[in-house]
Length: 266
Image (cartoon, rainbow, N blue to C red; front, side):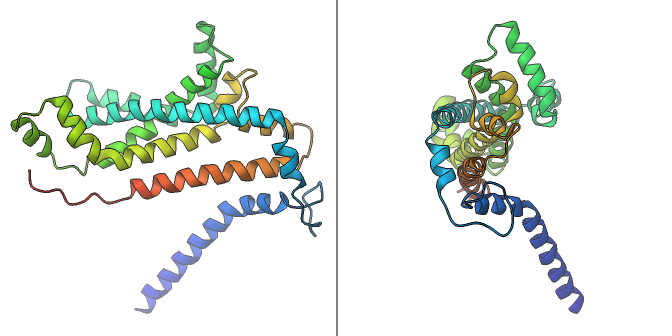
């Protein structure tokens, strides 16, 4: 009994240390974003919102924010559509080369981002498509679609395999069955994948930096502000980006982990 209690305390302490290690820099960035001193030093100066005013009165920041919003929204929609198609294909069909299909479908996130960025830049340059907002959307869709596929596939795995045949036996076509049975069941995971892929796209820097050209996203602007200069407005921008991203991730996590209702007998 004592050993179990000790183990629980050790695990709780270990988990707390991990959270502190991960979130301490984020909390520090939040604190210094309201610090009047230009340099992040202790003791802190007085409370100020100067860096937020400076950051959000910068037209370049607003332009990058709008572009990031467009890119992340379109990327989320395309990635989720592709991910759903791939997940349903894996769930419903057996075919020759299925293992190779799954390996290729889930490959992009395993490739180092710099390698992926260089490959996307070279491929897009062949079509004179590099340096466009569309370039970022294409590259981010390649990167994010496997995340959507994984989230939706987990949900489909909980579906009663007899539901679709039952709908077909009752006269429903495959499209009606998809619309009335499969999509409603998978809807929480679809929304979760929309949020997750939007967050990944909104935060992603390396690929966007290589393929965006002059069409900068928020992470690219942050790097340019930091280049050769310590500017506290980066803390303000970073805090705003973090709040957007963590909100999307939390929504995705809640929906992805939401247990499926026990299906009625087909």
